[in-house]
Structures are given as structure tokens and as C-alpha cells.
Length: 521
Image (cartoon, rainbow, N blue to C red; front, side, top):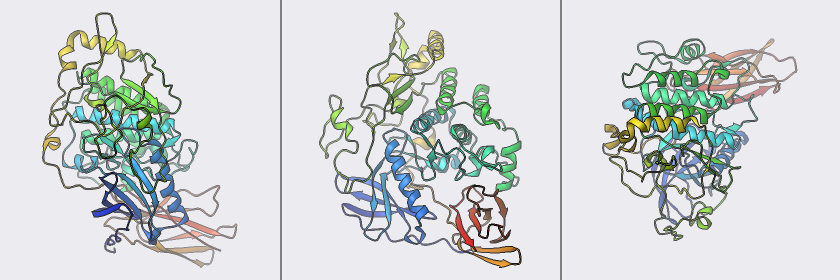
């Protein structure tokens, strides 16, 4: 196994000052820069010059466009700018999230039930927004959920996202959080595949391990795949987690996609029901929708689901200056300012709002925002401009009224104190973006009779790495993935006269590389 590669030198970007390296992956490095105007710290993801191909550049461009389209959502990492540095390397300028991602946190200790439910609802709302824009994420996992300075989750890494029309495509899901259909002979992904990964992520936060990881047993890729396909979901084993939560996760991770929640929105509402059962503050579901009207519509679920129109962003701005979202200027609320150097006042984040409570006439009355213990009651990082239109089911109106009848103090009270992790001193920033496994290099095929012997190098190897390969000689009918433990395999010569192979490196934690592809005549 070769040593991990050294990071590439940071590029010189006009209007930005390099501060430090944040992380390195298989095809990109992430740096911390300070932007001069407006002055702020940003994370800059830079594609490696030696790893650039038409496919990887296209993937990088797709990620920029997808994140720019969706990043007005409060639970999606904001993209500020994309471009090409003077040395030819593409880069992406994004919101800097200084706190450890959710993978780093759950490995230290499991999350509280209250925080797991809150995060689950917020991220599910982000995923629902992506689905309404026609985008599947396809790699939802704790490492891809960053944490902002205001303790809000922010979904990132849309590098393998695809449109929901491309349901037959298969790539990218990390094995521990992958649904069974991603390992079929004809892998597929759809909206319910993202629902599975959402439920698997919430389970992981609660259990402190991925859903089918067993302590003291083998947890290699093949072991996990077999359990994902055949084994029932193990109980959480927490006295503070109600049976309804276990049932919600079981349905979200059902083996048969048809048995799962039909949408991320329905999964989020199921988590809200558990919050109501536990007398917790109910986290609103924020959804951006292209088709949302600008006029006010009565909300049938008492404001627990909030929809507003999507704001588009052009990522090709160089250099970025002024307000990030142009719509903020024309749709600004009273008390905000257009000065690039001044603080822009934001509406409170959804998790700071107590749930609406019916008054004597039966109308919903929203309580004043209440800050969580340990958090500043400071303006939030994202604008909530725009008018909310309602969607949802009347079931929540009945549920909230029933709970209010005997649990009004609990509903209006201050949320449960955060875990010790939240109130401790900020940890050193880590995993600003999850590292990516390097693709195999020097992929070479030699014909021997009616077979091709392929060899390659694992350039960024780690203990336990294995490889997945498949026959891609025919683009319309690729073969099924096969696993090998050494950097070589034998493939029959294709009758069409051109034999092609695709090889990816698979890590023990379930992460794997983008594929290397080669053909021989």
C-alpha cells in the first residue's frame, strides 16, 4: 500500500487569501480561505490537476450547478462561486462550516433522541427540496452532513447527484447507508433510495454505529451488503427511544422500496409525530419549491410544513461580491440592510420556533422564538425572506390539539438542554468536506488467449481496501459488479471486438472511489 498523497499547493485566487488546508481526498483538496469582499471565511474545494478527466470535470461542474440551485435551503451548504484557477484547476467556493461533521460527532458518542429527530427533519426537508427540483442526492450519510456556526445541519457533497429521471443509473452510495436495490444485478436508485439513506443516517446518530455494523464481528463490504439485503434491522437498544421511533426507522429502511415512505416529506412528518409523542418542540419542515405561489395559503398542519419558492443562483460569478442571494435585496424584510459590510438580519432558524398553538377560536398562534441553551439568540445565517404557503395533512392539527390539552407547558417550554458535545469548547475544524477515495491508476489490460488480464495500482491505499470491477464493453448492458481483493482480475474477451473494464477502490468504511475505465481492442 502506498502512503497517502501530499496535498497540492493551494491556488492563487484573486480576492481570496489562503489560510490553511482543511482536508484532502482522492480527487480534490479543500482549503480555508478568507474572501476579501465581502470579508468572510470560506471553504474552497479544488480539483486535482493530475486527476482531471472529462468525466471528473463534468462531475465537478454538475456539483456546482446542483448546489447553486439548491443552496438557498437552510439545511444545504451554500455555494458562493465556481471557476477555474490560473493554473487550470476548477474550484468551488462554499460556506465554511467549522464544526465537526455528524460522522465525527456520532463516533464520539450517540446523539440524543431530541437532536436526532431535529436533524432528521431538517435534512429530510433539504432532500425533499432536492427531489422537487428533480435531483437525487444518492450519498446521504453522516459524513456528508456538516454543521454550521449556528449548530444547524447542512447537507453537502452533491458530486454524485443525478436527476430523478435517471432512475436506472447506479453510483456512489456508501455501502453502510445504501439500500438493497443498489446491490442488485441491475442497480437502481430513486426517491425511496434517498429515503432509505435518510433513515439509515438517523439510525446511525442514535445507535452510534451504521445500521448493519455488528460489534465483534466482520464488518467488511461483503458482510454489510449481505446483512443489508437479508437481515432485519436491529433494535436501537435505547430506553429513551420509543417503539414508534424504531417502527419509523424500520419503515424508512424497508427492504422493498414500495414498503418505505413514498417521499422524504412523509419521513419527516413521521419524525414530527415522534416529537409530539415525546412532548418535544416540533421542528418545522422547510421546503423550497419552484411551483410554490407567493400568496399566503392556510397551512393545514399548523405551520409544521412550510413551502416557499426556490431562488436561483448563478454560480459563475467571479469575483463574488455583495449579497450572496440577489433576491434578498428586492424581498427584504423590515430591519434588514443592503450594505455588504453590515450584518444582514435574518429570521430565526426553524428549530428555535415553538410549535403553533391554537387559541380559543381554534386559530394557530405562533409563540415567540426561544433560544436553545448554549446558543446565542443571534440572527441566523440564512434569510427566510418570502411568504410561506402551506401543505400538509390535517392529522397534525388533531395531534397538536390533543397534546396541547395536557402538555401545553412542555410544548411551550425551552427545548431539552443540548448534549455535552454541543456545549463543550469548539473542536478543531475537521472534515469540511468528506475525503474521497482515490481511483485506481495505471489500469492496464493484456490479452492472453480469450481473456484479458487486467492490473492496476491502488495509489492512495489503506488497510483492508478491496476493488469492485465490472464489464463495460457494452454501454447499453454493463455487467454486474464483482469484488476482488488484489489489484488484478481476468475478464473474457468481448465478442464485439473491444473489451472494457471499470474498476473502483472500496474502503472498509464503505466509501469508494470514482471508477477508472480502460479498453483494449
